[in-house]
Image (cartoon, rainbow over all chains, first blue to last red; front, side, top):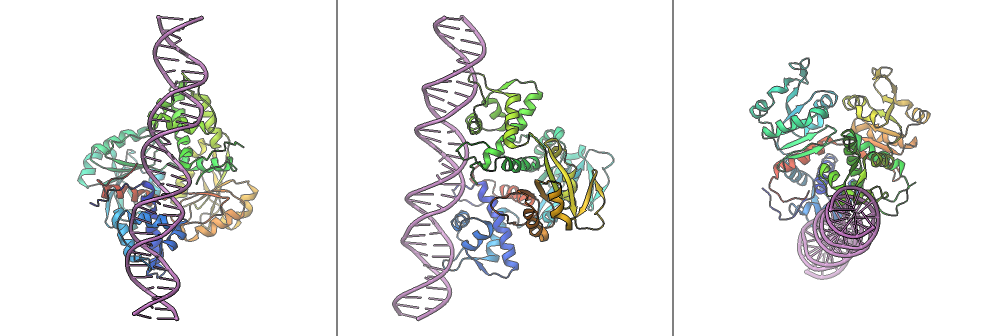
Length: 216
Length: 216
DNA sequence: TATTATTTGTGAAGTAGTTCACAACAATTT
DNA sequence: AAATTGTTGTGAACTACTTCACAAATAATA
């Protein structure tokens, strides 16, 4: 466990993900070191922001030279917890669920979908990308049996809270939800929500209020 | 055009979307008015935050009583620009694209997918949810002809920037991208990016650094 | 009608996040 | 080997965002 004593904001974590990706590209391009200035430029940030973000977790750079690309990438992977595999379950194999199963980036990052659940008898027993679809009735015991650490919720809004409660009850501490509804989880559980309608609303806001004075 | 003279943060816009959804539920539940306290509770925010957010755009409430549910919802719809229909084009009808076409929330919010594009000859000419798939070669002229105001990018990372450039060139001012790569647009164009791998990395960060002292 | 209870709207205060600016240090050049 | 250049790491300053706190206004009650 890393002890920094300093608060880490969600924005910093988000930017670490961005740095991780840029460093992957830099590595492919053959760069050995990279300066905060270059990294900032690629992500449209300030060099100070990059240095500050990294400084929360240690001193990775060399003055006068910059950061070692391969090593920094590995360090960030460790910080983000993506230097290992995670057992993931997907609940709901509708349109969104199907797209997620095929999302190659997940596998590449070590997020391995081990189990798929649905409540539709026509889907149960079928296979998606080689993964069998299980009856959601057996949710809790299956999650435990397969040591699932991370669950993706891709079910209709109407049943989402019930499923979330069961998942939390099974001891899962991290959820990614695509259900367009407010879901409650205990404070020791992390849940992130992806709501594409809200993303669209940001865009329509900007189109509608083109000349409005707003911040980044 | 609304002139507030004050800066509106992206967080405020995001919360307006949340309020809009809560107000829809409140309306269904038969509430006539709602206090900032109640609204805040539903979204796990502070009452002051709710009032401050709304105050950027006008005075919608009545002291001692609260906000009129139906009217406030309509006002927020107007602010967000979702009191009308928007012509949307979807580029790339792979896994993600297919999921988006079926996403009912889009239609309900007035985001109408008018055109679908792909570069795969086997898909061109076929129909998805009643919408024909067009050859991406004709992108620019089709976008103009159909008055597309908003484009969703669901193509592989490798071709995303080229497509984005064409879309921008066609005069589109708002893009939603699902391509897991850094894309550049001019400053007068709004682009939002949904990257599910980054969402997963937030989760694995929290699982990995469970006891780390971090901010909301 | 007067009094009490609510709840908004907002300036002020407080907190969090970003950028500045420079000492410290490493690499390169002369 | 000294001087110059480049770049990090970080406290301080600044900016943005959130919460506080209360006057003002309305509704409910006596």
